[in-house]
Image (cartoon, rainbow, N blue to C red; front, top):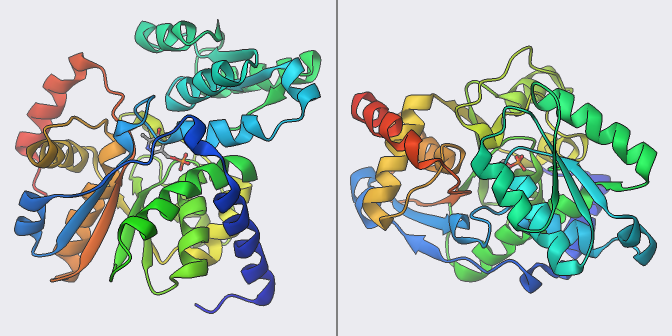
Length: 335
Ligand SMILES: *Cc1c(COP(=O)(O)O)cnc(C)c1O
């Protein structure tokens, strides 16, 4: 995998944006923490990048803040708008409050009260509209046109991608030694694009492995087709990654920077949530456990031993009531 000079220029462009992203005005540099029990069981050294410890309990705050901070005074005065029922909504709401920008978040009518309250308590306006996410999104885009508010994409925006890429900057600084692979959960591809751009520019020998839910494997489908495709249906158990089409900006990078993409089943996510709990006494949400589920599958299939593998634990926003289901399925999971 030797990038062309145009590809190398694109990576350099992102590395510069990542190094200049002022995310620490709001986000925290999270620990890269050893997982001793998992490491022992896997015969490999497993390190967890604890993005579940961010102020909004997911990494989305990095991209949202970096996007908002780059807006001109005039754009800021007109406010921002987005559509999201999840972690991006919380990130935009908090970033907007921090910067004194008015934020409107369109959420599908089915959004749990907890998440609506999360947005409102951070000072943003929550507009409930549409039966499902695509309807909320169409409404938000229309409102953006009519009101002049700046639309903030959850993943398909270079400033958002650069904000997420600061996760990789921290990993390489926290672990300057040998690193074999970084496992990254994939939804719309903002996180993996930022991580891959940074890592492939500086440490191209480190493998970047994307992990998708088998019910929303839009990156795998796009790589197989050689072009972005829209999945006919998407499962929402891993709601943080329930995206039908990989972002255009992210795909420009993933095309040549991602070494492998794997998919995992919901029961594997439940088992991974339990594994993470055993090592950290912390609960992750299903999307947040994708990378650990990916590592377990990778080690089982490749018989890798003695490697150093990083999993990005991307979020912790799970309803307490869902834990019963997770515990039940973890008990029956084979992996
Ligand atoms: C958004 C999100 C992802 C996926 O990130 P993308 O940039 O959309 O690929 C993974 N995990 C959690 C918890 C998320 O909120």
